[in-house]
Image 1: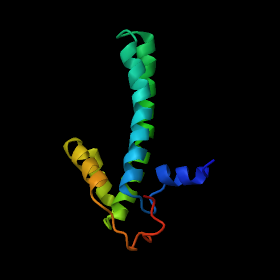
Image 2: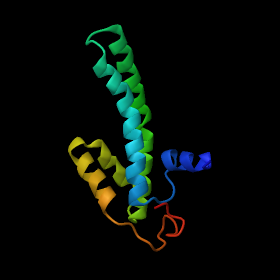
Image 3: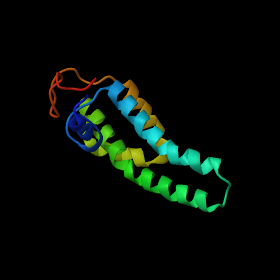
Image 4: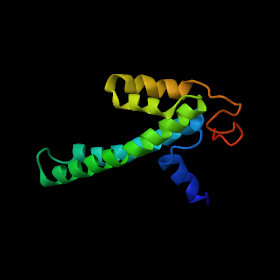
Length: 123
């Protein structure tokens, strides 16, 4: 069984570097978590109490998953030798999709940089 501290680091820490594949797969997992309550909202009758409850759950999940999205983007930016503050661009709706695709496509630096060594980088 994998060490749980690696998952805590991956989704909640702003330190270190991750590669393209880890970034994409981790974002996919967070997206699936967000889609679960949305699915339940769409399958119940509109305006029902159950839809309202799932709406609250969706809001809580959406707010709770903002931190992992930013943490993943910061670590991916670190792999590109860019400052993590650029992750703020993920909150601009039009830029968000372009930034996500760019972070998934652009290769990181194999060599050590100011954010960590290349050999400890998660692929």
